[in-house]
Each structure stands twice: as C-alpha cells, then as structure tokens.
Length: 470
Image 1 (cartoon, rainbow, N blue to C red):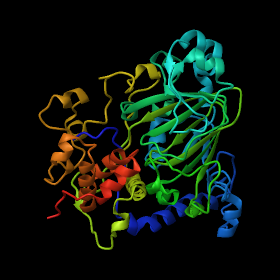
Image 2 (cartoon, rainbow, N blue to C red):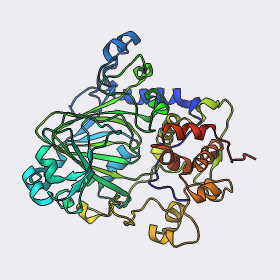
Image 3 (cartoon, rainbow, N blue to C red):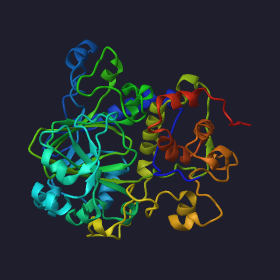
Image 4 (tube, rainbow, N blue to C red):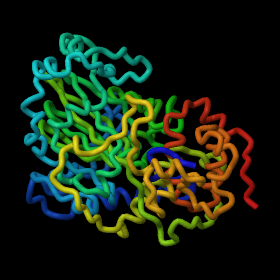
C-alpha cells in the first residue's frame, strides 16, 4: 500500500505523555534564555518569559489577533548568512527548529526581474489559481489569466496562489541549504504567492517541510509546535489541519485553551527565507504594501527509525481512554515526540549535489495527469531495494510503509488494498497503530486524516473495527 507524501506522525499514547511533551518543549525552548544576548541573531535574544495569570491573558487576548494573549516565548533565530545542507538538516530540519535566513533571496534574478510589467509581458496569458486575502477556504475565487489579475489585484479581494511555472524557475536560485540529493530528490511542489498584502492565513499545518522565500514585501509568521494541537481545538475543526479559530479575533470564551499555547514568532523581511517545520501550526500575516511576492519550496520528509528499526513493537495500552484514542491533535503531538526522540540519531547527509537552479530539479505537479513522480512514495521497495517510483509500479509487490512482515499491517488488509482513503482502511490503520509502535503509523496517518470532513472523522470513530488484536 503506497500512501502519498510520507512524513512523520503518530498517534495515541499521547494522553499519557502530552503534559510531559509540553513541559519538555517549554523547557527546551527556554534554555536559550539563560545565555547573554550578544547579537540580534542570537538564540538568547528571546522575549520575556514571565508567566501571566489567566485573567491577564484573557484581557490581553480576547477578540484580539492570535498571539495577543502572551508575548512569544521564542523569537525565531535569524542567520545573516546561508548555511550548508548538512548544517541545515542536522541543526534545524532534524530537530524541527525554525530559522530565518536574512537577505538570501536578494541574489535571485526574480528579485529584480519580477515586476508587474515583466510578469504581464512574459506570463500574462497563463492561468493561475486564486484565493481570497482572508484565506476563506469555503469561497475560493475562480482562476484567471495573469494579465487579468495584474490589472485588478491592487483593488480586488484576490490573492494569487499557484505552482511556480517551469519557465519561472530559471529566475529562482535554489537555496544552498537545499542543494543536497538527500533533500532535493524529495521535492514536492513549489508555489508562487502574490498580492498587495494586508492578508492573513488561517492557522493551519502543512504536511511537508517548507522554506517560505519572500521576494517582495514582509510577513510575520507565528508558529506553534504540534504538542499544542489540542489547545487549538484541532479535533473540532470542520477540516482537520485547518483551525476554525478566527486568527484575527480569537474568542477566548469559546476557545479558552488557546491561552495555554506558547508560540514562536518570526519577522520575515523582503529578501528573507523562513523555515517552517513540517506539521507545525502556523499563521502568515502580510503587511499592506504595493506588492507582496513569495515562493514556497516544499519537500517530503520522514523521521529516522527508533532503535528497533522497521520492526513494529507492541505498545502498552494501560490507562488509554476511548476519548483520546483517535484524536488528530494527539496524533500530531505524538509525531513531534517521535521526531524529537530520534533527532540526535539522524544520519549525516552526504550532499553531493551543489550549485543548481530549481529548473535542474524535478517537482511533482497537480497540473498534469500522470506527471512524473519524485522519490518518497515507494515505501519499503524504494527504501530497501532502491527501486524508483516507475520501477515500483512494475513489481508484483505493493510498496508498504509499515512492517511488511507483520501479517496484521494495513498494507495487507482488503479495505486498504482496494482504496487506502476508504474510511474502513483509516479505522483499521488507527487500530493497528494503537497496538504497534510502527514507523508506518507516523508516516501514514497524518496524510490519511488531514483534510477529513468532520462527518467522516466522526464516522470513523464510531464505526465497527475490522482489526483483531489477537
């Protein structure tokens, strides 16, 4: 069974471990505060961490923008230089530590070339997808030609959000920190964003690693570790992975647990790049300016194995209650726990590829049917036998992210063989992961459950299980 866009997540024992995860997260992030602040780019230059009372946080934050309830506990580290792929992966990606690279985009041809006049003359007849400035996921505007967008975007409620066209990639220098075959082979998609600013995204997660590159304008990015997912009422959203909380005016009477959240803050200026870790909740706010332009580079990622390797180990279920068994928020939090537990054992990257443009790399695309696939979707056949995606498709065996020697693994269950998006398959996978500590669970479950409608989510929790423990 091949579950697309594999990554890191896992579920369930979090009811027992969530308080410790949050405590560890707070302590780890606060350690930098003990050092002297000697540079604006130093991790020790963090916000005041004095605790506030509930009444104080309510007065500060009720019906105010998200994050108003308390100052950020962590100001994202800023580096005035680009770093090597090995440094980036080992010190930031593997540890899920956000970082800002100052001025890295100012060397791109796009930084000087992508004026309205140039874009209109070069790509004016290309069609792009649109969104609203307030990120209204329920009222998506129709797509339009770029020349139409450029003629009205300063006045209309429109925000261009679509894939970077292949020809546009020649103007984008791939950041040095990504020029490594262990990451570049796993590129997913790249997106181009354009508006006049004054926009605010919803509070949401992305299931891929993300480098957000600001060509023009300014963005404030608030990031929340997955360990706080339940405090964002993640299980009660209309669409999993997109919070229903209004980030422009948080109702703390309706959502009081928001006051328990501690968050990271990044101010990303024109020419900067910010790393947003996979599965982290984030809100992106754009200042009102003449022109906002950004490129987002997403790539697929998996955590390393625990000490027992691919073989799944039985979990101890004592003390686990029905209420939290299938919690999406707990799944996200357990994913972060897995990542942090294995971050110190992540293998060093070799990184043989250097000095290449985006146009030299292959990206997946939703714009074409049967488009070529990048690495990351071939399961064990790719990881253990080195088969590429096309070669995987030609074998008699199906790629599997789970312990394929375990006869109970979801890859062999009939409902999953028929359709791995079937609700019966999702429920079977959830129950399997209740009993086995299998990396396939953290790789697969977030993708299976993200963007499920609330009705489907409720149906899965109530339906009869086909999993048999014994």
